[in-house]
Length: 131
Image (cartoon, rainbow, N blue to C red; front, side, top):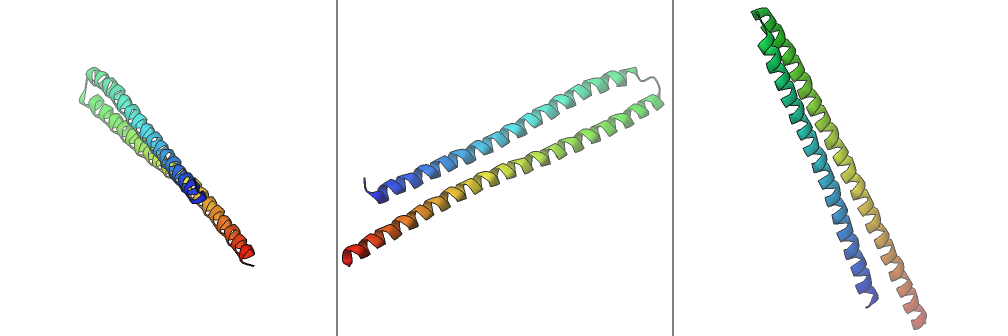
C-alpha cells in the first residue's frame, strides 16, 4: 500500500471513530433525558395518588381550598424543578458535544501537521536528488 493510501485510511478510521464517539455522546444524552422524564412521571403519579387520598379526607370547603392551594404550589415546584433539570442536562449535552468536537478537531489538526511534515520531507528528498 502506498503512503497516501495508508494516510487516507488513517484519516478514514479517525473519522469513523469520531462519528462513533459523537453518536455515543448523543445516545448518552438521550438516555439521561429519558430517565429524567420517567422520574418526573413516577413522581407525578405518586403525588397524584397522595393528592387523591388527601382530597377524600377534606370535610369542608375551606379544607378543600387549602388543599388545592398546596397542590398547586407543589405542582408548580415540580414543573420548575423538571425544567431546571432539563436545562442542566441540555447544557451538559452541549458540553459533551463540544468536548468531542474539540477532540476531533485536534486529531484532524495533528493529521494535517503530519501531512505537511511528510510533504516537506518528500520535497527535501526531491531537491537533494535534483542537486
